[in-house]
Image (cartoon, rainbow, N blue to C red):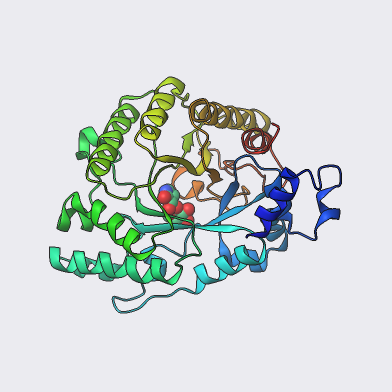
Length: 359
Ligand code: XIL
């Protein structure tokens, strides 16, 4: 039994209800936080900085019950060559998780992006099938029993389906067609029968024709997979929210309810607020970002309680957002629940209202 489960059991039995947790058991901060959680919270982590930035590691221990590598388990990181695997980064992150009473998500087995140059050599269906199966068997097999859920296929829907067609172009789609998705899930299930298998994607939350189309296509895909008894267990909602765009709460609620109605768990996997078009004023920007997160999580939690909520990073100090969405005024982006000095912002308070017991 995991330490955190013991603690929750003890609390449930009323054993320690009147005594502060830290006096009951010498348990990790994460386990203490977990005992207070209704929905586990976590963040994407830059593993190297855990070892070089003590304040970062301290913040992760303070707030997170789940970690996921921002990198490390993508082909670009894992596969320096066709014949080799490099597991150093995910091994270090799962060791950190184990040492701190946390779990680690697996992100991501099959994606169109972050592919090393040598993969252009995969130019027949036979080779694509072999490489897909081999990669999943080796990677999922290495962490069998240690990673509770995997993003098996990431971002299968086209960014703008009306322009690009329903499914996102990739070597997998080119060589295997839509069946690559089923093959990936069946291979992962055969490699680890006990891990939850997730289909993960973004942009289901806006009141736009593209979001509406993407919601419809994702539901059609999920229905097709479930009709074939493909072992898809959960839908991952990335949640990279566009700061200036309102959340289509009714549309998102209906979408989540329909997906859950297919027997799928719902995970929020990469939540942040892309604020490049929000006002420069930090206070205003932070409040708008917190409001978007509140509207997004309300729309989801009104119909289904997500199994976990993760942000794509924890502190504004380490965020992917400026790579693609830097601000014209040159000010740093503020997409995450902690500021660059690890101080909680309004967004963290909103997250805690949705994740902590008794909120
Ligand atoms: C991003 C990382 O955060 C960047 O550091 C990297 O350069 C590119 O990938 N959706 C996903 C994530 O599923 O894997 C992406 O992560 C962000 C968008």
